[in-house]
Image 1 (tube, rainbow, N blue to C red):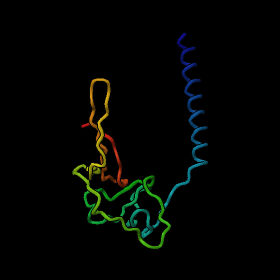
Image 2: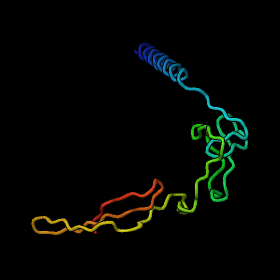
Image 3: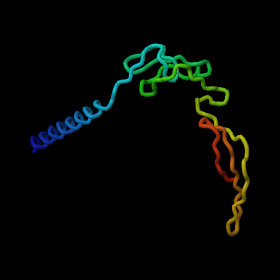
Image 4: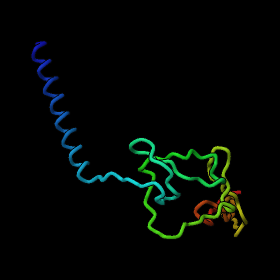
Length: 139
């Protein structure tokens, strides 16, 4: 009984390993390792390679609270000749480096009437990281 159980466990481990090896070989066919040279441009300029899969980037002063080392999966090669400048004046970030979305103006007011109640609705324009957004909220 113990011998039979041990044999089944060994067989299960072999099948799991075979499935793992098969999935790994399929994944390796589709994945190409990304590599960058020093002074290449991704989102920012690459300063140095840190280990096998991380790069140190040159961050502007406005992003001094962000760690300057990024994993290769977070980077994409920049194919433009001129540096892309993103204005930091319109972006508000809190202490936890989360975007602060602020209401800009009230666009519309409406009162939704049900049988016995009235619900005031307000359409608000927000300043967010993706540009202006509009939401309807209850007041």
